[in-house]
Length: 132
Image 1 (cartoon, rainbow, N blue to C red):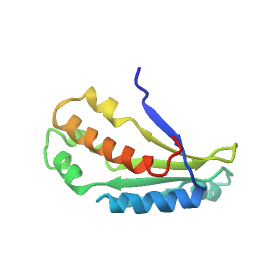
Image 2: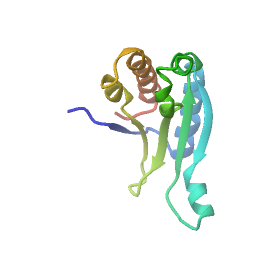
Image 3: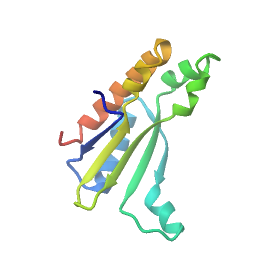
Image 4: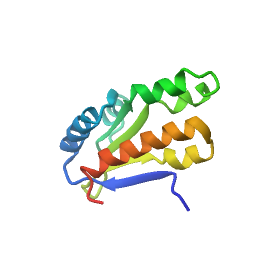
């Protein structure tokens, strides 16, 4: 059975993982749209958690194919792609993402093609810094 989410441990510490992933994404022809610091957001709301950052990433060519077709715009809520980097109580750093390849297999067509390409790209980014 396919998993809906994947998690890998990082070879590096938290900040280094975020920085390296950012660089790898840019080198791969993608854009980092935003980095959400969930630890900081929680802190502003009086909650203490371990470090968590979510990188929202986009490859404009992929996004365009979804957003320029009225029939495919329903999938716009899956854009941009997201990769999370976080630390757990064991002191290790992890990288997670949704298995959009599995989800897209239920959709089919162009959406499946684009989401599979995006998933493959993201997996290749993560392989470069993962222990797994």
